[in-house]
Image (cartoon, rainbow, N blue to C red):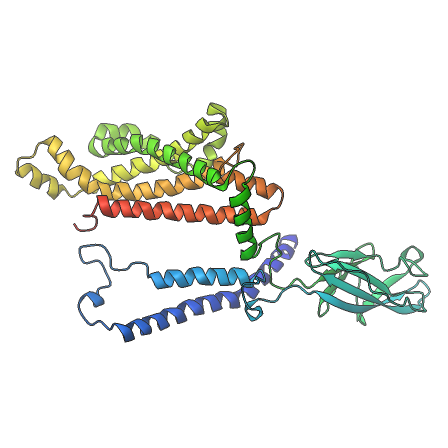
Length: 440
């Protein structure tokens, strides 16, 4: 029953978010149809290339549509602003926000002798940073006196309703109804702007309507993150500039990746060309491959401490096994007919290695390099969470301790942008160095 009680709010939240998910999918489909019709109207194509939709001996024609990518990014920022009440968006695009203002409700109290009286509770909900003062009210003539309380938006507050009453809870007074709706201890009643519940001790727990907008401490608005970016770019963070934090993270990734590639690629070639090396190293590689790099952090700290050496070793281990497997797969995937053709033309083993094996395995090696670089970039952030003085991960960890969510979001965005930029650079190098990829 306890598990079911915990799951019900989650299921309710999921059901409520379904319309937003359907609307997002609908926007994707509508934008796709409009873009396709607009392009066909401007530049209609009926040649063979326009009908190409699968691989015909070369790279697939299905590539990322730049317009779709731009619209996707814009939609993400619109959703971000809508769920944070961003001032960059018009208010009609905002999802319902928290209730802010004044409301009231009545409660009916009874005594041991059965005497009943009704009082009014005035509730003033205010936004963060707003200065408020309690409104003046008349207490009333009965034993139950009127109350007034102020609550910060997104917060809850207990009301000791009998504090100013003539007959108190210790004398047997208790609440039996809210707005003429019967209520008992541990029960709650949802009103238009507020939810009222009775605690086991008989006090009132007031929960103003929170709406669908995220509280800034959980998800700040885009303009708050942008403001923080300007501030850190100018003043720095924890005695280092923003460029220094990001630069150290990139430097660690590059060093660890290069060391892992320098050992992993020859190891993969050896495993792909020699049965002995394959049998010797295959158990080691296949054992270490599924082990996440984060699981090695405690061991690396014991071996090399918490300094730079430990972080480089961790990144080296993260790249090593991926590069070894990629190189091994590249060698194993070479068509034997190409090797036979080279031998028939008089090539020796060194020429086979130079002109057949290495060129045909490079596409797999570059694919592994992209994967390894991504894993290293994710690993360095986790490694910097442990006793680092500078780095993107250190920024996130230090900011989270003081609930500076805007810095955490900023760090995540910068990490994603740099990681995406590294992947684009790897793709460009692949197209430049391996132009024959996918061409048989």
